[in-house]
Length: 175
Image (cartoon, rainbow, N blue to C red; front, side, top):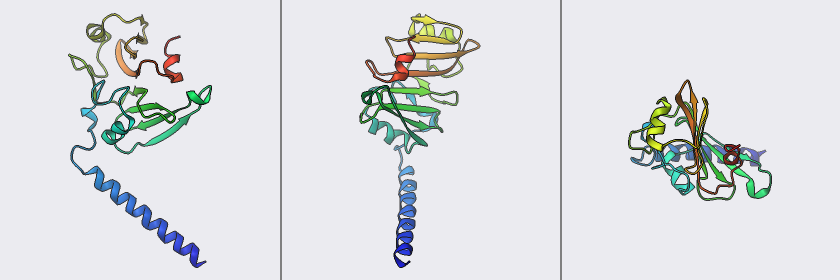
């Protein structure tokens, strides 16, 4: 009985200490990015070290393991809801393999014209040229690893992948 109480108090104190440390780290200037400061392809991009992204984005909301068709295709999905981002890496990998930008994303894409969600598809063509594939719902630039989802001719969401990635999601983007 005494061992159980001691264990309870040790766990409680550990939890309180970890919350305090996380709160202290989140107030350190320049450690995490604000939602509008994220530039896909610049300060968050495929191929960058996963550790650097975690330092810049902070503690994720959710981490999920995705089983692949074989062990070398297993991956992890790291969700940052406050940024509207999902970062993907191969299991055991140390670099970002893919990034998914959701409809709540407030940042921009690396471009001369500051592309944001909601722009018309003509702006994407002006910046990146003609896509390899264009439908009313999708613009594909597989050589650049860029995939833009459209709704009513406007940019709704995007995905970008590292060249040569083994992520199943990246291979599904090119039917």
